[in-house]
Image (cartoon, rainbow, N blue to C red; front, top):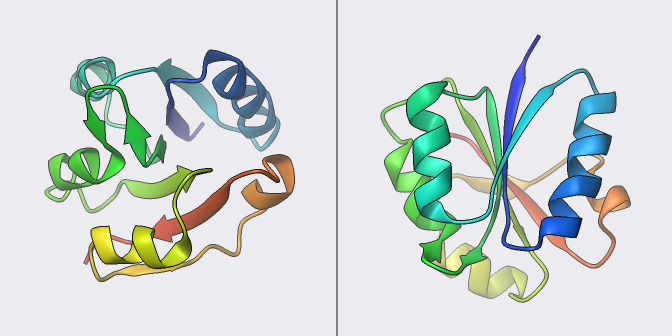
Length: 117
């Protein structure tokens, strides 16, 4: 079964997202800070990471950089604060609009899928 790591400082958002991602056939773990996410990744490298762009102790981009050496892990940046322009300006050049359904389950957020190059 594929494994997803959900990283967001909004606990209620992560609970809802875990339910939706679980219905898609993923096991899930949650983290609310970069420190917690890094600890979870140390225990088991996920197949996909859904991470908020803005976290209390850094950004989702910081986690992307941590995972650059793990090309098998897909990273989805989620934010309800930034514009597309801001997110793209701060992200690696491999960002593309996500064809996934995450936007439907989180209408207040914008989602971009990042592919490791």
